[in-house]
Image (cartoon, rainbow, N blue to C red; front, side):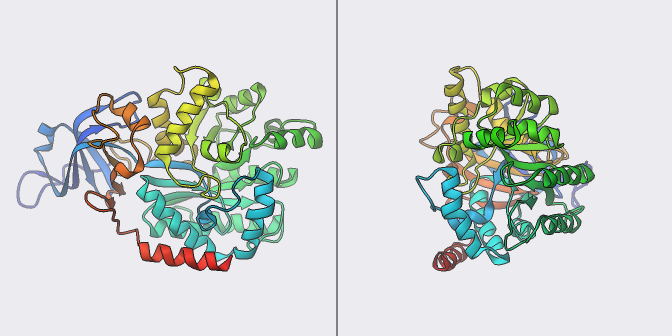
Length: 449
């Protein structure tokens, strides 16, 4: 907790680093709450207190932001990404998942994969995420140490996966190699304030039983999340039934994967029994509706999962299957698809969806103690959205218009650890956004293809 009794050197005012004078604040905790005319005090990278304008008169600050037409929310949490794949944007449109992977993505990765590819692709992704209000992401890819470095260099937080997959890559040649890399990754980022590590078995169809059992034990050893694609396609389910005589979630439950640390990604085709297993285990689901639609994977029964108490988070997936890292758009789509597939307009409620995009993601990926809500003592990872825009006027319902009307072009400021890393009051700009670098990196890898 921050000591708010620090006095200004020239008077009796309580001094903080930053004051945000907000028209509206949606703190996410407690849920279903909109605060009006609130001042957020920030010191040493953390939220000190939420103040009334009168209380704020007792504070001085190095910097004050007047956000008279804005709603301020916690930084958006992307619950599933493959950041280096920003360098593969646009590849393989109009293909099914397995065709897309086998004929486009895996061959391109085999040609390009390496430390530079991972770092530079993740750096591009981090820039797009920041400009979209994403302050933390949950990434699964090869060369995770390089990915983490790119996000750290971009002033973002991340959970990166110790990936395990059942075929050789530029990173590892065997299952033992993948687990050696995993051990090194946990050691490298132990105690890091900005990077946490998950165990990332890719999918049931790419990881065998022995490796999955080892992954479960590694997760238990470190108390780390398990980040895994599960029940993504109908073909995955039918193959599991053919090969193992059981559906994927049942198989994974027997191997120790289904627990309260699991982030089950996509989860498009669970039956009622699998939903019950996930709910009873306290697992989370990372819902990626754009990717599911583009690859025609199907319509995830998210409303049913929510009703069963499963923690829902929102993910963009990669730009190769989305094709952009836009959490506001993703959350809006998730809300509308959920209503349509459930044939029930009263489900996928506004505050539940905003919660999923922030606190739901933070809880899923092991960051709920630091981010996801605007509360005293938490990291000052915040996003301001200007609602005085043609998209969102007149503002009759702040939360509803944020979810259904606002877009990422209205994000005016982004703070991470209290530092303003994006400011678009007049022009798009950020100390972490270098357009020339981005264009040159993109051209370099485009030519390599």
